[in-house]
Image (cartoon, rainbow, N blue to C red):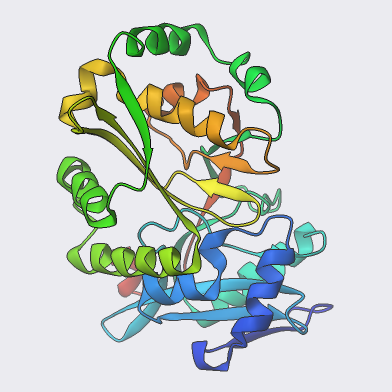
Length: 308
């Protein structure tokens, strides 16, 4: 099946978390979403893995179950997974991993990461992600700001605001859910609870940034929740609160975030978006596209195949 590759499927309890995470961290395309603790939180432990040799390359298999059938699905707040490898990922290796996933799980709707483009799978659909390298002085980064952003920052400067570190986690999460939750009815209560648990774990690990903007009275105007690893800062939640809407507080917040981390060998990962307005907003900061890929297969028996 996978010749010349030796790919094994391991259940969660069989996976060596240390070796798994070492592969993710050594991979040029490694992302925080693929680390074992992140997957444990966001799936409730419902994930397996495909492993090449002795963890030379890995692919998380995040599954759900319906009608007694397990299928692959993307967890909430987990933008992209797919195949991670410390060495080059050729097309035939991608094909081998995807073929193996189809043998164990007959239905899949998942997102592969930006390093998993595969010309042999024309059905892979690109999704938009935008990133900004912070490895330059702030003056050089700001020189790439678009005119719209400069205009908005000039408008923001008319209102006294302060960029702060560490608004409360509960307050940050609640504000995001209150404003944007109704737009995401597919994200269930369980997913929010798991995400809060993940964020608490990230805080204990020193891998979570919370940033905000307040007015002169201390009222919160905007927040940002950003997990971080050795390569990236991930803008996982960005919330513009009603009080900050007419003050351009979100533009102010991201500008100050960029200023804070300028000169570091990190990427600011804006986490999207396929929404034109959101993508335009992030492009104004000089970000560039780094597409990732939606992958689907349906090998369910008839008549179950008709339901998907």
